[in-house]
Length: 240
Image 1 (cartoon, rainbow, N blue to C red):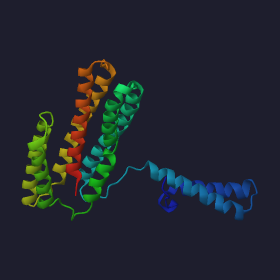
Image 2: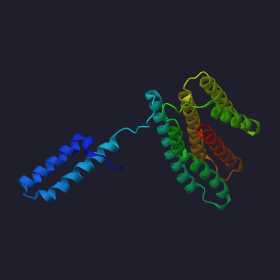
Image 3: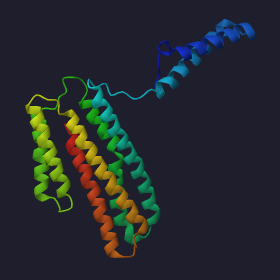
Image 4: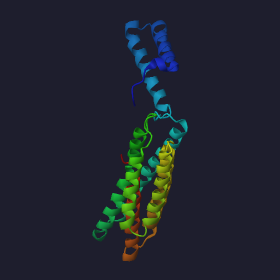
């Protein structure tokens, strides 16, 4: 919990003052003792109040900030779900023949758990009115996506195609002098929703699959690879 200035929070200051008066006048504690106690009460109260305030991202666009906060919540939810799936896989995939599959699932979950920090990284880049996405950055992202399209599996291609079209729209906005940040956040939100779908599918398959069946374990590995592919696309969107 971060330190907070009590002067910005009247109620904790009032609580400290009441404690000071009560201690000195009612309990006869010396004021030299009660002053530090009252200060601690006020500071602790201010810290609690500060922790209850909505997190701010210091963006110049309130609507963009709201949308980015929503995406951050999506990422945190995915991270929690991925951590739960990782623990579940560790309990289900316990035989030596399943070690490779377990490693694949765990790696995909570990990558998903990094999503909140990646969204935070994007939020830091978007701070300030001079942080409009540049055409060069967007073009570089598009080049990377199109390069991946040429070598990707058929499973990954639909999502990469959607990402490519989204980046083309963002480039057009940037060239017109418009703020492309909201379009970038919308693309990220869609990508996280798709990631959540694959993560849920992987969890359902893990719970119901006959793990002795090589075909079903192959499907689990394929879903894990698909999940990693989505996260690589997230990396492309939030990269510098």
